[in-house]
Image (cartoon, rainbow, N blue to C red):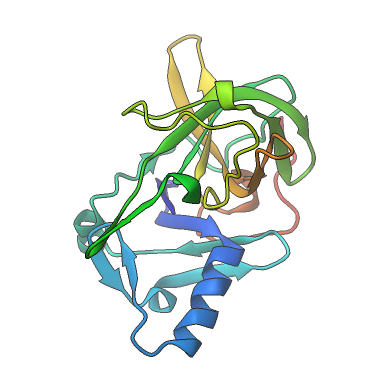
Length: 207
């Protein structure tokens, strides 16, 4: 899940299928809880929109809850951002399942970042070809074996890498599918989400 301030609301965004699976498990297991950062929440109470076709879900947590999660909301310069274009450099991130370590009372996770060029775009998504040489983590533990699966990255951010006039990252998408077997990561354009958090099947088509 990523947090972003659109100028109108502070939204938390994840992949739609992640939220759908949470609802299924909530109905199946009475004691199941959702923990966002350091805070346990009944996630459905904070839902803004859920679109299965575009595989996105948006939520709004109060400032107090968001502070408790220890998440830092990305401050968007403008919203919605323009969609990614072929050839642009993108930084993708998340917590793939293959790097998780189950321990007593907790699950250790390693953040993985991938920098690569966008290979293809459409009206609502981008596709980035990646390889293990593109991946790394702050601790150095994120080096991937050949053909490693990236399940668990869904809901992670996609940032456009700007060099001029200043070097900075712009949140422009959300990962909904990733596989190193095929060396590709798909991200939904952030322009599919309005500043209020509503998800639209007719995203901004500006470049």
